[in-house]
Image (cartoon, rainbow, N blue to C red; front, top):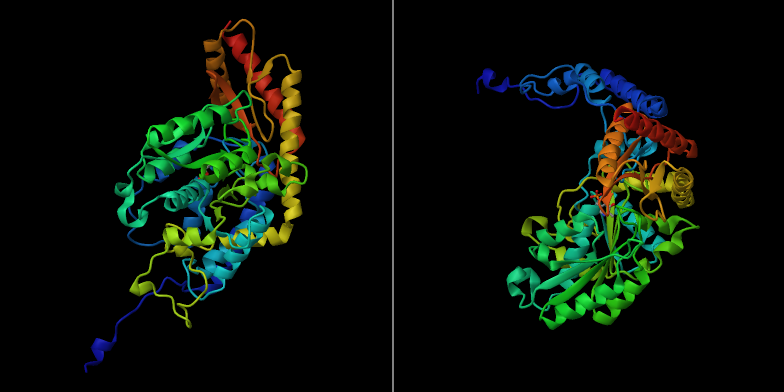
Amino acid sequence: MQRDSLTYTEETLDPSDWSANKALGVEMVNDMMQFLQTVRDRATWQPPSERAKQHFNAGIPFDGMALEKVYDEFKQYILPFPTGNIHPRFWGWVMGNGSSSAMLADMLASGINLNQGGGNQMGGRVETQVINWFKKLFGFPDAASGLVVSGGSMANLIGITVARFVKADFDLRKEGVYGSKKRMLVYASSEVHNCTNKAVELLGLGSDSLRLIPVNDQYEMDLDALAVQIKKDRESGMQPFCIVGNAVTVNTGAVDDLNAIADICEKENLWFHVDGAIGAMLALSEKYHHVIKGMERADSIAFDLHKWMYIPYEAGCILVRKGMQHYQTFSMHADYLAHEDRGVAAGDIWFSDYGVELSRGFKALKIWMSMKEHGIKKFGRLVTQNVEQVQYLKALVVANKKLELLAPAPMNILCFRYIIASKNEEQLNALNKELLLRLHESGVAVPSYTVLHGKYALRVANTNHRTQREDFDVLINKVIELGDDLVEEKK
Ligand SMILES: *Cc1c(COP(=O)(O)O)cnc(C)c1O
């Protein structure tokens, strides 16, 4: 053999200089810790600069550059322009804040980069333990199962998928929607989050198969209307199979009467699914856990950890009361994925048998580490704190003649607006919309918006462990200032 043919080069992505790489890693950790520590000193949000936007039009990087330089680009063009949800005065939509320790856990998870689809590795035990803890916390039996997922949307999809599989009176996995002689229906209040609509559509049922039941003046599902609708649908030859109960709605923070819905599901032989994306965490609060009473009777519970448990994105979870039904809905066996008794392909639980994804990241680690570091009691106190802060805000709104509360705000979500007698509804809507945009641009605070009975509302959803009561004084002062300015300008 010619010597020449042996001189080939092989490459790897490992750094050529490990000590420089380690030093840069330490610098990044320090920078991010500093970023978190000083978050209160910065604007809640600022618009991305034109220069930063332009930067991302550059062409494909065929040849590499020093990691230090890439990191500089991150610091210049990405770091200053996030959504702002880690800031103490961010209350838009429903967003969590993350924490420095969960950030570190994410780094550890990426470092070991194990595949949480299955196999004989320790990550599976961690996820199982996290799921077991939530089973206990939510009053679910040992035979329940669960899966850590990307968020509430995926969790609700999985719950409703299991519901349909269990309630179908034909071989659903084989025949799909074609096996159904009757239209299969899901019921939820008109306030249900639209990920339930998405789930119903994705399951091929069609949006007509989601019956949106009207709400009462507390924005809770009208149970009489629900009963009437179920009866009517049965009489016309359709098959109701699932009711979705809301534990804290996204618009106004309402909680459906979960116990009553559980009764109806029992009586009607329907699957009881709870969308607890926000509100399941009330189970941790000594003071407010009674609000979601009845959730423990659900057949499945979807909940988010990146909202009211403050875990960094992404983290949600689904629990199913009868684990075997969960497994039967999703398990699939292929020769290349056979589970062995020994070796790497062993392992008791293959999470890929409980959901959509095969390859999965180790999201469970940041949840596990956070629960252990802080303890569940602390999360319970923070949930209580967030509710009471919003009740404080409610008192500020109610006491101010220039402000109007637009919905009851029983929990951690509050909708209000600036009002002035000289303006009609249409003008008030325009005024409050402009007010909100100016508030965002001011960098002082970020609520979001919704529309309630035709009224444009500023909407505060508090799942923020950094918020202090005074932050709501700052919010109210700024809203009044901006509202007064707008009234003055329009004169
Ligand atoms: C946020 C939310 C969802 C969707 O959860 P994601 O984590 O955003 O996918 C579902 N239901 C409710 C009530 C929510 O607030």
